[in-house]
Image (tube, rainbow, N blue to C red; front, side, top):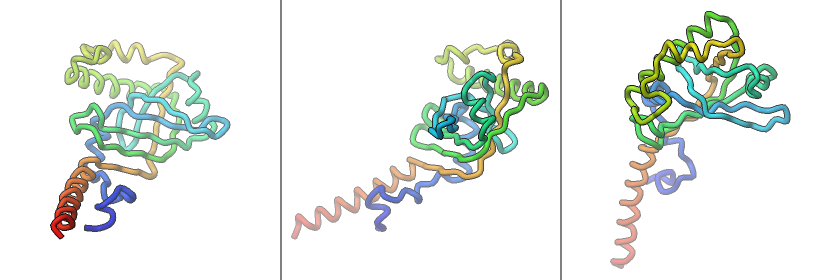
Length: 188
């Protein structure tokens, strides 16, 4: 048993496999979007997103402080968790990257429609969610389609994936080894 398997000091061995990471990105639907304010403090919000073309796409209105911050400095991060997904809790990925702002109608309508379709599908799977249950995609797009709304395109540059299922398996193996060691000590 390695030292890594007997404590949680180094969790690199518990990385989310690339296929599971993609599954997480494709199913979560919400992320924490993080940027830096003028003073350099990181701050974030939970927001809906759409994964497409290897990017994470979000929307907000122009007056949001995050839009002004991203216009100043596109460096940003996103955290996605598996909590509330069919994958079960304990999996997450953090991305470091850059965000750009889009105001053109073509990009806005493309993204709004993707988001609306995804949220409508989510509503069919999660009828307890009053916001998405019975959501009409066309009506949702009408609510989004205002002159003040923009689209954010986040490009990941580095990832920190974590798989709690792997950690649980490693922990169970370590517990079994600890029990053997303890039994051997008390038998001496």
